[in-house]
Each structure stands twice: as structure tokens, then as C-alpha cells.
Image 1: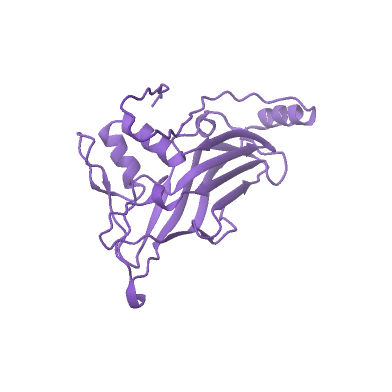
Image 2: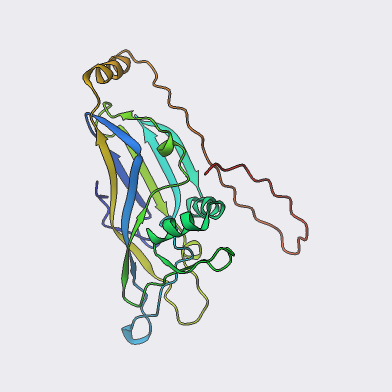
Length: 241
């Protein structure tokens, strides 16, 4: 599915929305996104402003919120998506983290020490094609086939792009601060089950019965700490990889 909004950025439309419709089932674990990041920075006399440094190589770097609705009901509303994805990736092995980043912007450097994870920059006037399979969504990793028999928008996914300071590194050394996201697409696997199971789900929907889909949700809090604070208490939830 292609996003009906051609350009998403912090200066224009900030939200990309996808409505998935099908008479069959969908495997939520197969869902992934692709998009293109353009370095649109302009310097003096119209010249390119320099390279664009993503703050992370992960594909979620430019997204801060994701809302998933199923048959009109909000099942998951995740804030600080880019931070949560980075936290989950940090708890994974180096090889897994390298794979996550290579499907995004690519790593300029990454070792087992965990302190040198630098994303590949986007050159002046250049662009980068990025893919992203969400790690932070428990609903998309529930392991159940979802029936899409509820109309034209049985499954809706809305993602909102970040602010400038959450997406790039600005070290003041003639780097670009302007970007836009284009060619946004959502990819998924459409599944056809046997007639007996399809009829069973259809009968439940016609009868108005609930289809229970358990999943483990992840949550991220952002803390604002007063200047000069020397002692801070942090409570971290357990994350399963």
C-alpha cells in the first residue's frame, strides 16, 4: 500500500496513514515499511548545505508515534517510537543490531562495545531508501492471523514523523538540518486460510462476538530532569527479544 500523502516532513504533513483492506487474512508479523529520506538542506547561494546525519541507523529513526487500529478500535498507541526501537536494539546482540541498522540507513561504525554506533550520513542533495520492520509493536508480533472482513479500513496504521532534534545530529559543522520523507509504502502478506476456518471467523463477526488477540505491549516514557539534578531514579520494564 502506498501512502496517499506524497511528502511527510516536520515542516508540512507529519503523518502517514495506511488503510489495509482485504477479504482474506493478514499476517501482522509480515508488516514492514519502506520510505525514502531526502537531504533537502540548502546553504548559501542555493548550494547544498552538507551531509545529513541520522541519529541512528535504525529505520524507525524518523518516526515518533505509531497508532494501530483494528476494526475502528485503537489497539496500540506507541509514543517515542524511535527511542523505544533504539532501546530494544541495544538489548539485542551486536549481530542482530547490525542487521536492524543495515536494513535502515547502514552503520558507519558498530562494535561490541556499544558506544560507537554511528549511522551512515546522507550526502548533500542525496537520498537514502530505507526499510523498517517495527520491533516495538506487540500487536504486530502477536503471532495470530487477523481477519480483514470488516470493511475498507479493517486495519489502519498511522505513523507520525519526529521533530528535527530527534532525527538528526546537528554538530554545527556545516551539516544539513532539512529533510523530507517520500515514497512511503506499507508491505504485508495476504493469507488465504481453509474454508472451514474462514467461515468460523466470519460467523463470529456476523454474530458480533469478540475475537481475542493477546499481545505484550511495550511502553516508553520520556523524562524531563531539572538542571543540576545529581540523583535520578529510573524504572525500566523488562523487554523480551
